Each structure stands twice: as C-alpha cells, then as structure tokens.
Length: 129
Image (cartoon, rainbow, N blue to C red; front, side, top):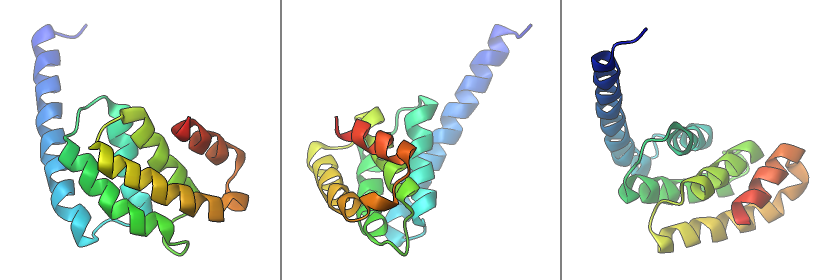
C-alpha cells in the first residue's frame, strides 16, 4: 500500500521537476539545441503526461519546430506526425502560433506524404480533423 502523504510528495516533486524542465526547454528551443526527434519527443511527452505547460512552452516549441520539420534532412515523417498529434491533443499554445505551425507542417507533410507509414498518416489526419 502507498501512503497518501508519499503520493502527495511524489506528485509535488514531479510537478517541480516538470516546471524546471519546461523552463529549460523554453530557453533552449530558440537556440537550436533540439533536433527534430528531440523536439517531437518533448512535445509528445507533455501532451501525454498530463502536465500543463505554459503557452510560452508550446509557442517556443512550435517556432523551433517549423524549420526543423520542414527540412527532410532533419525530420523523419514520424517526427512531423508526432509533433502535429501532440499539438492537436494538447490544444495549447496561442492561436496564431498554432495556426502557423499547422499551416507550415501541412505544406511539409503534403510534399512527403508518400513517405508516411499508415500510423503516421492516421495521426496526421487526426491532428487536422
């Protein structure tokens, strides 16, 4: 059995860690420290973990994602699909930045649609639904 006090302490430690991690990501996204897969993994983790990240996190990630995901030498189709799915699932970020991300990645996706596997196609279609 777990002790309720231990559960609360663990949740608080997780929240503090997440806040520190997301603040560090906000600093590093514009510097180009993240590769396409790393950025896609970061936004996927936030979208699936249930933590609430700030619009600043989502917007800075989106601004960093656009050039990475548009570059076929940088981004695999899975990175594009996971990035789009994460933004669609979270619904976070400011509307103008989200609109730009989805517009830019629609263009990038359509140019490489023949490279997407079935799951990537499904996740990408779901993101735009």
